[in-house]
Length: 90
Image (cartoon, rainbow, N blue to C red; front, side):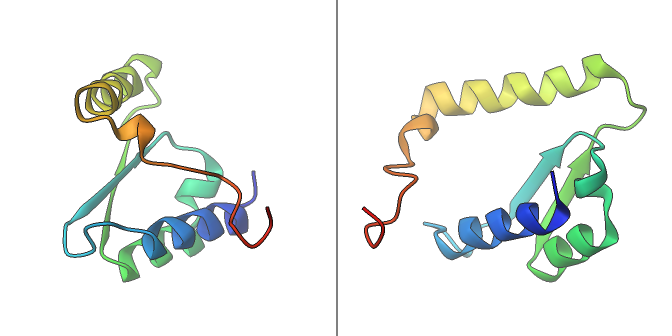
């Protein structure tokens, strides 16, 4: 995955934020695209706090994934994306 594609996705997410005044924590594994200074600098310039696994421990990321799953289930966050295709294209 290219860093530029990750930045594009992050830009789209920022543009569509429902609560732009709320803080953001971006958690990821230590994929090269997320550790790339171009990506981390972009995130930090946009007020995003970066969270990554610490020691490449595969079990460490499971905790964050579980929390994300609970948030999606409890708050219906999995239903917030209405369409992946913009109305201009479809």
